[in-house]
Image 1 (tube, one colour):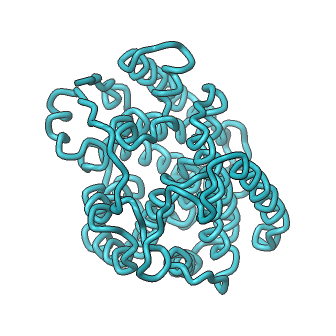
Image 2 (image 1 turned 60 degrees about the vertical axis):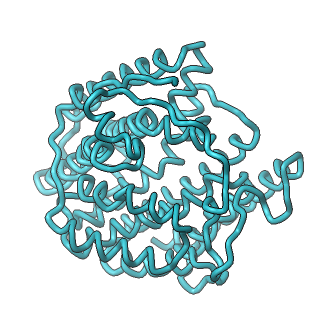
Length: 382
């Protein structure tokens, strides 16, 4: 049985973890809310519960009030639905799925009758209750980038394409939705940063490298789960194996060293933040602290949840060794109910597209998506 040893990312991380005191009750509310839509098969629901998404939110947003923490949980659970659907779709369908979510964010009256539209609408209503204009604008933009990247990821998966490192880094920052998770810091903290701060090169570096730290750790920890589902093409470990001719352990080791270097850069870059005055500096530091909470919280949650290591979690924690699971065969449990009580086979488009037609359709939808994004009034009015 093939196996690999995890790098000790915790030992390279000087950041301090914390959890939200509202986790237990607010998490239960959010979990009950998403389960009420009955979008998961029994197996998928078990994965959802074992993954403990709300525990990740507790680590990532320990500073949020009860109401705002609940909304953050709702967002992560909504992303879980979108991610689970798109993971077994081609580029055409994955982009179409993402557009359901985006269309509702743009216009809450938009409806295609799907459960995803209803989920998105209810989440949007709670977010809008307190989100400030800058937060809304940035959040919607990062969500649009996420949907576009998920469509590209799905198309690459159908093609069996593994990107080079630079191309993968850009795609991964967007398709991870980590930028969107960062964008709601302002909502969770009840702050409103001006563009001059958010667009400052040092601030942008901290966001980019914080995002990379979350993504690279996620890729290392999730590699076994992804390879067992045939989804490992979108993973830094696979990218490093393809680019350098590494075996699995060599690629994991290199990914760990990259992570350690990124952490060092992140810590040093924070010291270079300029001053914008006492009040704004306080908000900026709270935001950067929040990035740190996401980074270290992701590490901690990965060893508290069965999301990545399943029933082998305790063994992995004790030994640091991950033993690869066999490839799964897709079954009815991979179907997700997004329209009424009917299931959809999400591994194919409604047209059975698997060829040149898929690529052409994908390019057409991408073009329409960019036109929609450019003319979307919600971005222009905020």
